[in-house]
Image 1 (cartoon, rainbow, N blue to C red):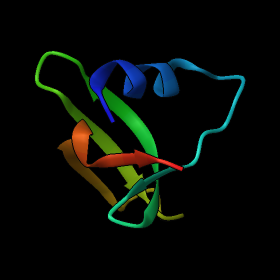
Image 2 (image 1 turned 90 degrees about the vertical axis):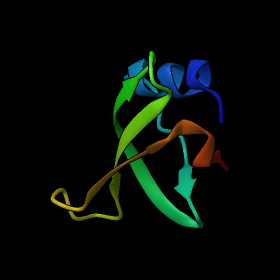
Image 3 (image 1 turned 60 degrees about the horizontal axis):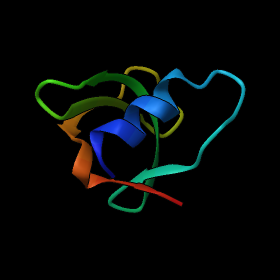
Image 4 (image 1 turned 135 degrees about the vertical axis):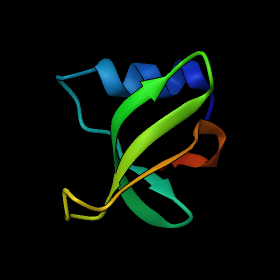
Length: 60
């Protein structure tokens, strides 16, 4: 995924998009456009977050 698409998904409050990180469903919590990074919630646990390069994210 590229930074532009990650931002589109993050800012769209009307739709839900299926995004995965290495096969696991994630929720995009924040996007750092300058550095190409995204903070994501992995699975259903709100405390389980990771900051990863947006190119590691895949839209299903």
